[in-house]
Image (cartoon, rainbow, N blue to C red):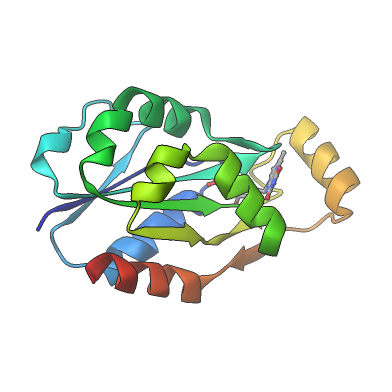
Length: 158
Ligand SMILES: Cc1cc2nc3c(=O)[nH]c(=O)nc-3n(C[C@H](O)[C@H](O)[C@H](O)COP(=O)(O)O)c2cc1C
């Protein structure tokens, strides 16, 4: 069974999570970063996992546009959906529901909320200002939930 993990990242966190997930899955797993991989032949994969991050309440634009264009094909696959974000608990769940279409959420074999990272070295001036104001922090933090990635991988193989 061939698996594709399709994602995009702004500051590298979703990339890190996608790579960690790929290592948890079997060797027939291929990673596609939507920033550089423009053509993906979805017909070659039985299992597709789509992931992205949240910035100011919205899903990464490239991931959103990929989902919008391929919603019908994705609904026919064994599908997994994951999100990288800093909010946890109900707020994270609410964001997950807001950004992934209901038709795909219902169809998906696994839902994952993998946590997030705030990487000040990669943020621009405006992003730094927003994060300082909203989160009241000035140093990078990593809050990736590796155990959620493991459980997601396990669920996808069931
Ligand atoms: C400017 C900015 C806005 C953000 N807005 C949100 C948000 O609305 N909700 C949330 O849960 N996380 C938010 N985050 C946290 C990101 O989701 C987190 O940094 C994530 O790991 C980014 O993943 P990426 O580097 O793969 O894009 C924000 C981060 C930045 C820098």
